[in-house]
Length: 155
Image (cartoon, rainbow, N blue to C red):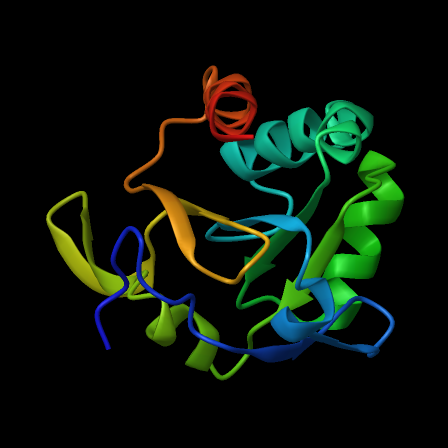
């Protein structure tokens, strides 16, 4: 299923760092910032998570929740959130089904080597469950600011 702007956001249920189930349907009526990142505790992913945490209250005032997704385990998310004092919800996608639904599990290349991995991407989902905006192959610098500005524009 191709994820398209203005299309219905693919439904999902995943687990957070405490093993608690989190479903997209739980957030109907709210904006959802669903961001996918490659790996806990790596430099870019850490900066992105810290910046989303710092902006959490501003997003909440705009009626939005922030959900981060990576293939890491709930235990890894626990260590990551504790070490970095993160205040956002991180979801575990160990089987990569959620990454595949949103088409972010892709072939990547580094140092001449090809491998499958998460392409850093963010989806802004409106209160009715539609994709309002998509950022693909995200560069971390200023990304949180861009997401917040788009949300302010669409509200």
